[in-house]
Length: 373
Ligand code: HEM
Ligand code: HEM
Image (cartoon, rainbow, N blue to C red; front, side, top):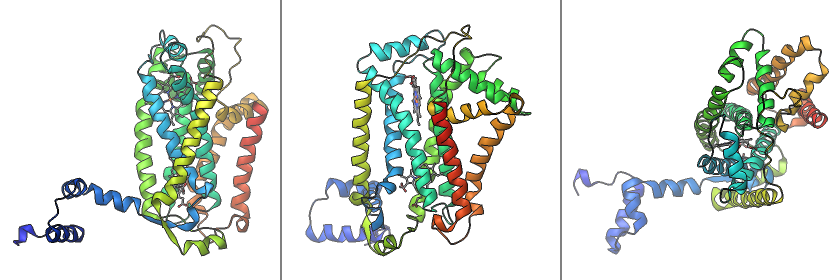
């Protein structure tokens, strides 16, 4: 055999020997693998050893379920694009057509509608799981930080999607949202102008929200998600906080099927729930946007309600302060967390300050969401 014919990887060497000795014809998989390396890469991907404690554990399936939920959202979003018309004159009618006339339009739109809330809940629960299991600690800082950005992107999807039907609900909530942005000290008016594309909400606003919703945010999400999942693979699953888990961690199981199966089953359960909700009550559509109707009482999506409601408790002149301070405090401390809590301790009850601050945030968000609703 000449130098040029030497196999380039040990994996290929083993295969080549087997094939020549048995004289069997190469299978389709071998043929593809020799040319692309994809079959062996896939095999390595699926057989990745993970600690036994992730098996059949709901808490460790929250990230996977969020991923499945995102896939449903992309799929339903792309289907909506076949009928949706992003112009201020036609947007409402196109959404009305999707909801009441297009074949299965009611189902696709309602799945997109309910699943948007499901994603926000799942991302939040996944965030809490990784927080309380101290999975943000070194060397997983980048996994956590990419997660924080993914969280913001998810909220960005919710905010921009709400305006797209161009109905009263979306119009007035977005008007309040952009007015709140306008109150940010120093940057406010530039920020509001950037969001609206003018002094008031109009065609340019819809264009901007549409492009952000269907192009900018999906692109950013895919990139960040690739980084997030690669980091997760690179570092492996974070150590458990329980003794029992540590004992079980001595044993590993393959990623497929042991871990994946739970994500698949939960994903199918979620799809069944979304179909049931859609069938029970299709996604709502309020009256068409009417900028002249100043009596309309605006209400944002439920996941922004806590901030909206908090504003009721502060005097008008303190509003700009609250609008900046609350998000900055919450998001800022999420970004700083891995660099502040650098100790070895992973058990939340042994880190009372970190845990108390997080519980305080969660309590404020939950209480003000309920009060607001
Ligand atoms: C679009 C949203 C997100 C998706 C699709 C996603 C997906 C995943 C998946 C599939 C895993 C591995 C399985 C698991 O541990 O559940 C994971 C791990 C992780 N995620 Fe996320 N994630 C998202 C958002 C977040 C957020 C918001 C944070 C926190 C701010 C975060 C922090 C982490 C951390 C620290 C790990 C490592 C956990 C460990 O090693 O035990 N992720 N993510
Ligand atoms: C995390 C991902 C996403 C979230 C949270 C989300 C959220 C939303 C929300 C809340 C609405 C308003 C739905 C309603 O009328 O009640 C909406 C509408 C819409 N979304 Fe998304 N979306 C996401 C991804 C996508 C993607 C990837 C696309 C397409 C590439 C898309 C396309 C659309 C379209 C065309 C509409 C207008 C139709 C309608 O309102 O029913 N979305 N989205």
